[in-house]
Length: 101
Picture 1 (cartoon, rainbow, N blue to C red):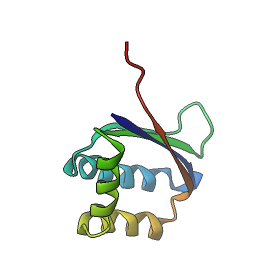
Picture 2: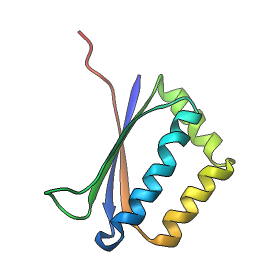
Picture 3: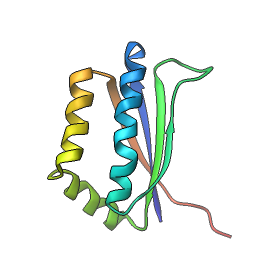
């Protein structure tokens, strides 16, 4: 399993818009075989920070997801929404693996 950790720098004036964007992506990740672990929004922290975590069985399956979302109408709608709302200033992706015992 591989978990994608996404760190977002938000426009602090557009957190509500980012929340709407985030709600779009949870079912989309799951539509393509991933498990979404949620978005975490600013609360008693920097007002421009959000993170999300979602997993795929393998990096290869994550890469297939990345290809499929390029042609998916709902995914493109979510991307366009974020761009129009200007709620995301930047983001970074990290890939993590769980520690097994």
